[in-house]
Length: 105
Image 1: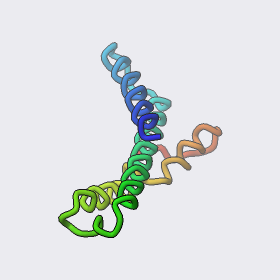
Image 2 (image 1 turned 90 degrees about the vertical axis):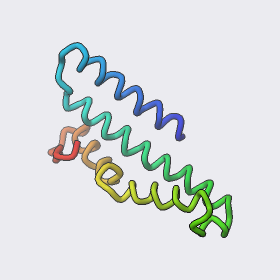
Image 3 (image 1 turned 60 degrees about the horizontal axis):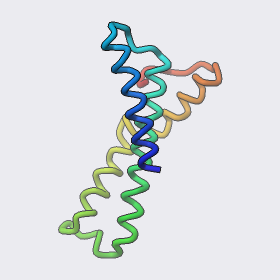
């Protein structure tokens, strides 16, 4: 899942880079796609860290454990603007032709 999420981000960014390099502007569809890809990747990364954290057992809660910081970091990112689950609602609304607030897309 994490590899697929990474590939989605890279593919989305490659298309944007190609168009920008050719002098074109970023389209709404590209903005929507990269927002969906980035938000998805953040949550897939969180899932991977959660899996490792749970596998590590009780010692992973201590500050000297390498997973403790990573656990905090990825969970912090999911709560910030980039990782909002509401982005999926915005993208879905836009894809269905409904009114969508594209402010953060």
